[in-house]
Image 1 (cartoon, rainbow, N blue to C red):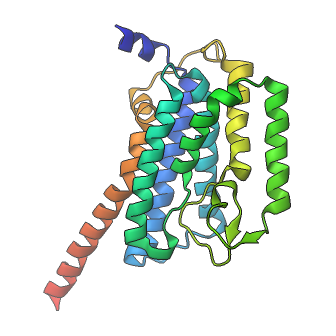
Image 2 (image 1 turned 90 degrees about the vertical axis):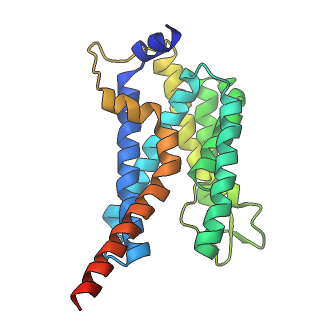
Length: 241
């Protein structure tokens, strides 16, 4: 009964935004994997694909800020679990990608934000607005700074030669998460949709509900499928020789 009530109380526009972000992210990572693993001539660093991936991440971060307020679960515990997954991804990408491995990607970022959420929630809207602005200004002031250690990567200060396939430091992206928290405090504190009409799509709800799981598993699945079909294609070509 409790599970059914949670399903009925879902805020549909949050589901739509989260599902959109996940779909855009899957598309971007598919393009990236095709280029990196089977040398398909798609420039994932071009303006279109760069912003397609970036918009997906920004939507996901913003919605996570709202969802942190809406969640009835222990948000710090959830954040710590995400950080554990993030550490696993760090190890795996180090073994697979070498120097471009993920030191502080979006999962590291989101896990940290969730751990910080109880502190952020104590501030009112104006206090959060000031914090978000200060974070963004500090990002602009220090974004060209280089140091000799990786310890400052979580706040966006890198070392010479730093490269990573996924990098979402607290400065400036914590500002986006805080904007989500502000939206929760202003518009979603009653945990109801802002719209008078309702929209229900089971597929969208499933994607939204399991967005974290999808994010964690989609890359290995995409890479596996791409390499499988690449192997089949090469075997077909060899059989014709």
